[in-house]
Amino acid sequence: MNGFEAYVFDLYGTLVDYASLASRFAGKVADPDAFVTSWRQKQLSYALTAASMERYVDFDRLTGLAFEYAAALHRMPYDAGLRAAARDAWSGLPPFADVPEALRTLRAAGHRTAVLSNGTPQAIAATLEACGLTSSFDAALSVDAVRTFKPRPAVYALATAHFGVPADRIAFVSSNGWDATGAAEFGFHAIWCNRAGLPAETFGKPPARTIVTLAALLDG
Image (cartoon, rainbow, N blue to C red; front, side, top):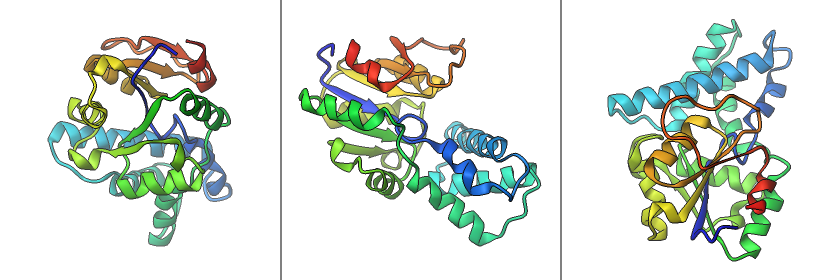
């Protein structure tokens, strides 16, 4: 497994499946899958915009604001209670089927592991607890510590500081192409878990590896 000092994972879309949120909106909106896609895209857009503005608003609040936008876009009636429930649903997302075994194998081989997420510390902890993954990680690192968002280098530096090793000794795994690119630019051995079969990013440094399931981590 390449002898890396640590494996660091993105959370949303890499370890846990936000697309599962669509089932919560069946009967409330015409196309629940499209609604969740719009919600996720606006959530990330707000995070990137906040980072560019050097204005920090935590990810829980951005998730709520993105929900309002997606609801308006898809003409879905909502109230404050539904918005709060929808935001909190991000803390109960299920893990992808390949995740538990991949993490068990990494841990059994003696690798240190961490989550590095745009989420708040509370949301990360709740998500890992809900899907039974808390004990799979040595650390849960949140952008709250540096008050900005990926792909700002200060976020990725949380992992090098925590483990006390150079960036190239850390394998960083994300399902988000832009995140894998940001990690590669920082100096990590970036691994893009391209579950959706998307085209490669055309801007920035490419990841060192592309895989389609976390089980493939154990092949290298």
